[in-house]
Image (cartoon, rainbow, N blue to C red; front, side, top):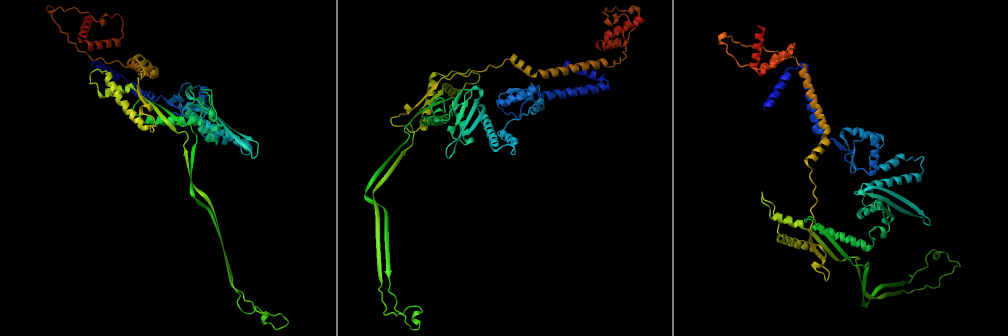
Length: 554
C-alpha cells in the first residue's frame, strides 16, 4: 500500500506540474489506450477468424478454385479446416473481392441448370444441341447432389442414350457414376446403394442400368445383380440373408441400448426354396350344373269376324265385277313349344396353398458385454467414502454381478428372437458372454511450457501491441517531466542560535553533503532543485548546509 500511495503521489505531482495542453494530450492518449485495449481483448482475441459463407462445406474442386483465387490476389492468411475455409475477420472484404474477381460463386444444386438456361439461344442453337446442354446440366446437378452426401468427396455422372434398330425402334439408357470417398477410404455398400437409387430415379432407368465406380478402391459396382458388390454376389438368397441379419441385429441392439459397449452378432439361415405352391382337389359325387338354357315358344290363331268385304267395292254400282260366293269361317288355334338344355360337371373343391420364399428357419445371436460395465455397477453399489482411496472389487462380487446381467440379457434377447424351431433350445440359439475391454488411450495434458508457448504463438501480436502502448506511456511521461517548469522553492526559515565564545559546545563533525563539494560554476536552477529536495528529505542536513553557507559568506 505504501508503494501505491507513493506512486499515486508522484502521479498527482506530475499531473500538477503539466501545462494545460500537456494535461489534455495525456488524457486523450490515456482514453485511447484504454479503449484500444478493451477492444483488443474483448473482440479481436475472441473473434479474430471466421469461416467463409457461414461455415459452409465445399467440394475439393471448389476448394482448389478458391485457393487459386486467393493466390492470385496475394492473400495467404486463410486456413483450410476440413472442407471449410477460415479467414481473418478483418480481411473478409478482401477475400470476397478475390473470389468475385475470379468469377467464383459457391455452387448449389441448380447452378448447372441456371447456367445452361442462361447460355441457351433458341434462335441459333438447334433442338438436339439444346437437349444436349440440358442433359449435361442434369448430369452436373446430380454430381453435385451426390458430392453433398456424407462420405462422398467428389463425384461425376455420365448419362447416355443409344438408339437401336428394329421396329418399333428402341432406346437403351445407361448411367455411370464415378465417386471418391472422403479420407481416402472406400465406398461402403450402403452408400453405393444410395447412389444407385438416386441415379436410377434421376434419369428414369432401372437399377441394373446404373454402374458405380469407386475411384479410391479401384472397384466397379456393375449393373447386373451378380457384380453389384465386390465382396460377394447379390443373389436373391444373399440379399434376403443380409436383410434379415441386419433386421434382427438392429432389433436386438435397440433392446440392449441401456448396456454401453455391447456387441451383437446375428446369423440367419433361410429356407432355400424360392417358390412353394400346393393344390388340393376334392371330387363331389353329385354333379354340379355349370350351365342351363331354357327355350319357350307360344303361337296363337284367331277367326276372322263375320261381315262384308271392307272398303268401297261392295258399295259400287253393280256391274260385271266378280262377287263373293260364300263367306269362310276360320277356327282359333294355339301352339306352345318349350326346350331346356343343361350342362353338368363333376363337383370338386380346389384348395391352393402358397408359401413365402426365403423365410428364416434358424436365427442365432451372440451378445458380448464389456467387463468394465460390471465394475461400474459394483462401484455404483459400493461408493467410496470421501477422503478414502477407491477400493478394488473382489472377483466373486464381479462374477455375481456378471451372472445377474447375463441372465437378464438372455431373457430380453430370447423374447426378441422368433419362436424356437423344433429341436432348438434357448442356449443353442443364444450365447451371452463378456469380454475384457481395454481402456482407451488417454491424451496427455499439455504442460505449462507447451500451454504458454501455444498462447504466445496465438497472442504475440496482442502482447506486442500492449508493449508498444506501455513504452509510449513511459516516453510520454519522460517528455512531460523534462518539459515541466521547476517547482518554486518555498522560503526556508532557519533559526541560528548565537552563543558566547565560552558557551560554544563542540558538535560532532558530520560529513558534508555533496552539494558543498561543488567547485566552479553551476546551474542555479539545478542547485535550487537539489536544495529543495534536500529540505524535503532531510531538514537537518539542509539547515547545516545553510549554516555553512552563511558562515562562509560572513
